[in-house]
Image (cartoon, rainbow, N blue to C red; front, side, top):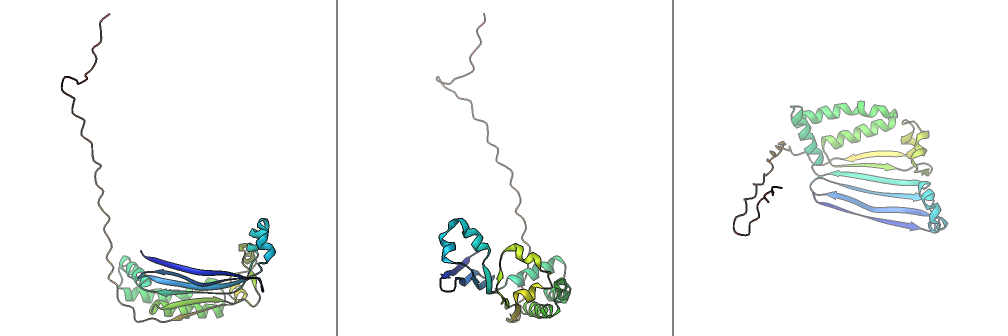
Amino acid sequence: MNADYGFRLAWHEADKTVTLTDFRLALANMGTVTGEATLSGLSRDALLNVDSLRDALANLKLQKSRISVEDLSLLNRWIAQQAYEQKLSPADFRKQLVASIPQMVSLIGNDAFQKKLTAALTTYITRPGTLTLTATPPDPIAVGDSYFLAFLPVMIPDVLGLDVAAVAGPEPTPYAYTPRAAPKPTAPAIAAPAAPAVGPNAKGPVPLKKP
């Protein structure tokens, strides 16, 4: 597996923001993930005070973010594997997967976002291209884990200002999946016992002397 990654991280004193730009993780012949984010609330005082820096980072507020996933065959390979295991054609498994999307996203409980997510996932699975999720909160929100415990799943898309979209790629090329056979275990090598030493200087067992 060949991977390539990179990103830029910067702090801006004027508005106390941290920006992550040009984030990129590319896996050759598999896919690419790109993204960016802007967080606010990091002051010079926080950077200079090491003891309080951890708390300051936990209280950063998200202003906006984006993450995009571009498929370069990983999804097609996974579909081919699943279809093989379920004794279906990749095309039939793909249709089955698309049909199950509405039920999978129904746990969110937000009808408007569910429709967008269903449409985007349908496009991405039918013709894998690029899937993009953006967050633009109406008001910057704290990124600490405990903050989201106050919201029900139905509220999170609106609190985060989530949007999702997909750009269709070319018609998927059928991938011939062939399971790899596990290598047969080899018996451990057994070392032959050392040959007894011979010659005038060979040491043998010392005879016991009779009292």
